[in-house]
Length: 352
Ligand SMILES: Cc1cc2nc3c(=O)[nH]c(=O)nc-3n(C[C@H](O)[C@H](O)[C@H](O)COP(=O)(O)O)c2cc1C
Image 1 (cartoon, rainbow, N blue to C red):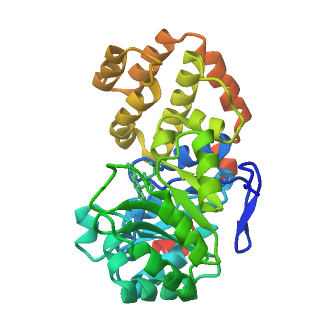
Image 2: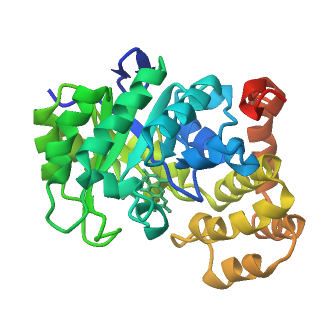
């Protein structure tokens, strides 16, 4: 029996209300993105990867990644690093901040990360990988999940030999993005490997890679036996893709809906990152939201050149005047920040 996308499932005792997981994406998966993903039907959302060294040194920006909202849960916070003891300490901070799951990154192919022995490097360093999972799982009560690529080089099957060992070490769930680190994002995700991994382990497996539509999601769930699909690039500036995969939406959004959702996202991002950081952060989102034939290209280029977010909002409302009402309706339905933000425990700031 194929699983229903709308049905719930569990990672140990954490109940996840749909089979859609919003992917962790560095430079994308801010809280505003995660809360939006939950609103459109994702059952589980994930922070971007957080450096365990940054947490160890109480780096202020890194600590900011641990600010969790009630309305985004269930939520996984992903950590990366190569030292088991430091990863275990980071996991304790993640748990104390209110995350439902600690996710470990064994897939990042970026050289800045792999050269430190973290990310995808661990796919071919099984002893260290297992030591990290055992240390993390031993230090927290919440379940620990691991996200993998298939291996370092093209054609590698490293994830299949490593996966069962990670489960033995304490992983309660595995996510596989079946591309090699060398591949980065080229070629396609080979989900025959995901099906093989499902056969090898007795914990839920999440299939990540090239899930762009409800049709593809159903196909991958059926062909692999995975418990859920993860959606990444398809959801960038496009929460409606999550809605379509969840079976909640059938039509493309109107221009007014796109602008209302974008402005809501901009305002939430400013509260989260501050105006200055948000101004740069948001530039890539204009193309993502307004592309896909929704607005002409010169309009997106014009927005990127504007210097303040106030000017961007004015330009957006001028292009889609009806959007202001849609935005007001969205803002009135959502809980205020003060109702949803969990405080960072004092201990996270080193007691001060
Ligand atoms: C911009 C970007 C940033 C990413 N950052 C992370 C990350 O921080 N941690 C991680 O495990 N995967 C990361 N990924 C990989 C995605 O989680 C996902 O596995 C991959 O994009 C394949 O899924 P997709 O085809 O649905 O995009 C990132 C991907 C992109 C495009």
